[in-house]
Amino acid sequence: MLNLSSLNQRVNALSSRINGIPVPVVDNLTAVLTSGDDAGGLNITNLNNLDTTNINGVAYPIPVVVPTLDQVLASGNDGSGLDITNVTNITCNNLDTTNIIGVGTFTINADTIKVDSSIVAVGGGAGITAQGVNAVAVGLNAGNLNQGASAVAIGDSAGTNNQGNYSCAIGVSAGNASQGTNSVAVGNLAGNATQGGSSVAVGVNAGKTTQGASSVAIGNGSGQTTQATQGVAVGLNAGYDTQGAGSVAVGANSGKTTQGTNAVAVGNVAGQTTQATQAVAIGYLAGNDTQGAGSVAIGVNAGRTTQGAVCVAIGNQAGNNIQGYSSVAIGNGAGNATQGDNSVAVGRSAGNATQGANSVAIGYVAGNITQGIQAVAVGVNAGKTNQGDSCVAIGNSAGNSGQGANAVAIGSYAGATNQTAGSICLNASGSTLNPNQAGCFIKPLRGVALGIGVGRVYYNSATYELQYSTT
Image (cartoon, rainbow, N blue to C red; front, side):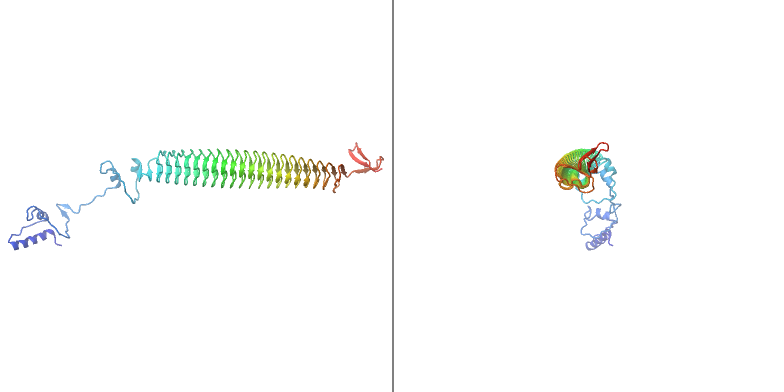
């Protein structure tokens, strides 16, 4: 390769021959550059492929020393650290932020990631104002304003305003506004507004609005609106709207609307609508609609609709529809429809339909249909159909059908069919005895030759027996 010095020598030799000028002796590039034709240095232009490894005793090209990130950050142009802004698309592997965090807050884009020794905020608007120590906010506007100490907010707008100390909000808008101390909200809109201290809301819209202190709502829509202090709602829409203090709703739609203070509803749609204070409903559809204060309904459809105050309904379909005040229905289908106030029905289908006030029906299908007020029916099929007011029927099938008002039938099949009103029927014969008029009818009555006249009745005071004379 032709170097500059050789080229210069040849050019000068050629010039000397042409002009008769002696050829100068040039040893190196420095001499050429400093002692050219004009003695002030030679201008060189249009020169390609110049190969130099040393200029003025210095290696060429000059080595470039690349500083480390720590050197750049610690000793920048102003000697006190270099601020780096408007940098995009940086890929870092094994970035050691120990020294960065040690001197303050490490921020990227000022509003996206903020990490220091005691707080973490990731996302636009996250942890912007008054974020407490040891708090974590991840998501757009998460923990935006006044996030409490050791609080956690993860999700778009989670724990946005006034999140309490040690509380946790996970999900879109979970614990969004005024989440109480030590409370937990997990799920989109869970514990969204005014969640009380030490309360728990898990599920979409669980405990969404005004959840009371120390309350629990687990399930989508559970305890959604105005769940009171120490309320418990577990299941889809359980305790959904206006659940009373200390009340419990377990099961889908249980205690859903206006559940009273200290009420209990366990089972799908149990105590669903307007369950009163201290009422208990256990079982599918138990106490479903308008259950009275202090009443108890246990069993599928027990006390289902309009159960009166201080009532008891135990058994499937017991007290199912319109159970009167202070009435008792125990047994499947007992007091099923329109049981009167203060009435009692015990046994399967006892007092099943339209049992009158203050009446008593005990036994399978006793007082089954249309038992009159203050009537008594005890025994299988006793007073079964259309038993009149103030009647008494005791025994299997006693006063079974159409027993008239104020009639008394005692014994199996006594006054079994259409017993006359006001009559008394005592039957121990094992067969039917049906009085057809008012009076006292007794069967059997032992005949004895008393000599007092045929057919005359005699009471034996020694044996306490009622007899009739055969002579």
